[in-house]
Length: 67
Image (cartoon, rainbow, N blue to C red; front, side, top):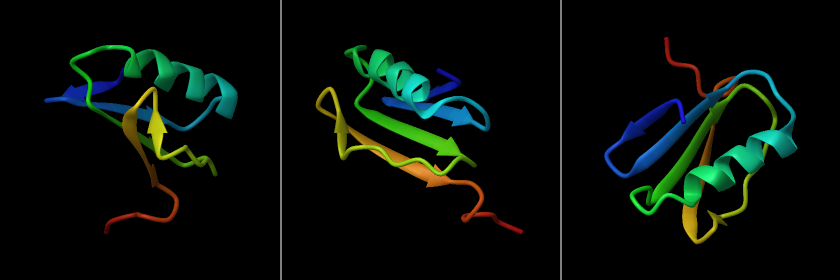
């Protein structure tokens, strides 16, 4: 996991196959101290609402740029 902020696992991805990224997020969701999964990526990728019962969110960096 790139960052753990409190009970949030935050993964930053620019490259990689969506299946591999999802499998990585599934592994993070196995940790009992993780309650939320957040993927920040420039790839076009969707996630289910939950991964192993943990709420999952995607931040699309190519659309949510701050200036």
